[in-house]
Amino acid sequence: MVGSMANPRLRSLLWWRRWAKKDWAIAAVGFTAVAFALTLLANSWRDEPDSEITRPFHPITASDLVELTLLQNAKARGALCLDGSAPGYHFKKGFGSGANNWLLHIEGGGWCNTIESCSWRKGTSLGSSKYMDRKVPFSGILSSQPSQNPEFFNWNKVKIRYCDGASLAGHPENELKNGSALFFRGQLIWEVVMDELLSVGLSKAKQALLSGCSAGGLATLIHCDDFRRLLPTDATVKCLADAGFFLDEKDVLQHWTMRAFYHDVVILQGLAKSLHKDCVTRMGPSKCLFPEEIIKNINTPVFLVNPAYDFWQIQHILIPEASDPHGYWQKCKLNIHNCNPSQLEILQGFRGSMLKALNEFQKNKEGGMFINSCFIHCQTWITETWHSPSSPRINKKVRKVL
Image 1 (cartoon, rainbow, N blue to C red):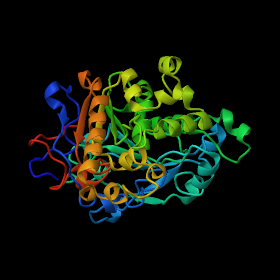
Image 2: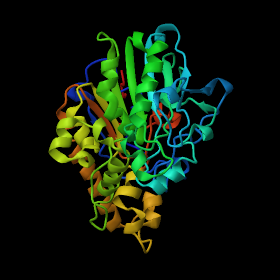
Image 3: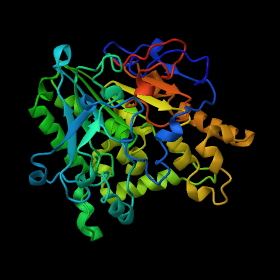
Image 4: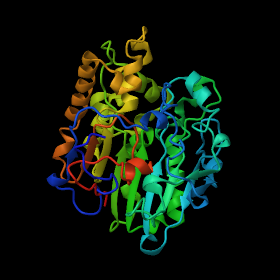
């Protein structure tokens, strides 16, 4: 981290008071690389970001591991992973003062935009519960250790597994047309997961936070208002999108790579029905999948956590593999310290685009953001970037989620 940054743990900028102007923290501290970022994201250099089940850096104990629960009535209601298996989640019951508070976290893991990529995906944990680990560690914002997660350690905590490839927003209308054994049921998965959680106590929540990483962060934004609608009117409800603010930017060859990719996801999996109707009417569904448009129509308080030099976005939006056939960017996009001055200038331009896209949201008095300059992707589910001596810091300001 840059030395001038002081302790602001992600866990503490956001929570149960109103987010005033003084709570807006935008770190414009220049380029910085987190030493463990390359290890953390070593497998994310494919066309889709990997699942966040990378091993956390703090020692794992038996109490950190949480069992997988498969949805009981998934098949009866048609809520299926890409391969037709039942979706799942991990649930750790709250206790003490947190017994009536809930934190839901949607797993990340990119998207699939073609029959071929979805067919490959259904043979992994990102497309089938058959390949999901039966126990996963809860760390960072999901940790039950007070020292690691002071605000949420005793809340009911749920990790929703991601197996549809479309940010829990797909619809089945196109399944028969493509002639493949693929199920596009993301929206149904969301609905059935919510129904099951409501039946085991979520319906009595006093405080609730819907969060997600990467594609799960995008899913958080898509479903934020619906989450608010499902809960008691007197409950305090907010949403947190971690590394889910994907930009609609041209790549280094001036091609709209990400826009074309999202267009294919929307068409293949029928996402239009899950997006804001007015936006879809005005701009078309592909444009409305970008968070810059989604947040304009969210009424529930939202907090955004994102690095301005988002590791995944730099590799897949700004410098996708097809835009660098001769490997000019190879070393730079893997380690920012390897970038030459002209490359750094382009990366600074990408950072500028991120901040520009957030200009309008910054006027939202009910929302907040924490934008740092780490060369990383997701940050909230990792102990080291959530609440530790090495967590990102800005001017001694503590990040307040509640």
